[in-house]
Length: 277
Image (cartoon, rainbow, N blue to C red; front, top):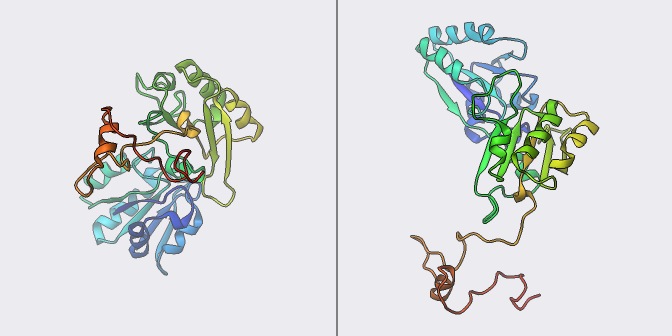
């Protein structure tokens, strides 16, 4: 039994392992409401294809039982990465009760896909070094105590807000109440990497109006935080003063990096002061 991360939508964002597993499966279970049909192109001819979009877990449990009995292989495809809002844990428990061996194949999450679409790093040095993955409270699944959006917003770092577009006004209010300034940049991504994707830029102060203008209420992710527009900082990773097992530090650059007096390190090529601009 495999639980397979299908990624955000585009079939070519499957991992090589995911494509191989789907191709080897006797039964492929997918949700037409969440997974793009192109992913099924990886299934082998003759494989049993089951659409689970209208089935509760009880509806697919007979397939799991059959797999346990005849040792057939089942690939259940989940959108994004199974570790995030995939209702996987309850299925793992069922599989273990059936003594059915399980392997999870991770997938590309929509929040990293959206960051790639807009060409941004979410952990910009000196701006944001953490990414909070959460959803708005008040939906169908109760949120544990202490996991309110306004509490997370107090950190001021990058936030990926899932499953919240239907209550964009509440999301905006929570982000503002937590301390994000109204001009904090936001990326609104609807069906990222699908053929009909829509990616918008706005601010925390204009989030609700933007979402309502485009009538978005599902399959939409918000990325929030100053890292979405920040620039001009530099990490230590590729700094000439940083050393590791494979590279020695330049002494002058090392001294500058550690805050000791010494000649300034050479600027990055193309930056002001490098002699090329």
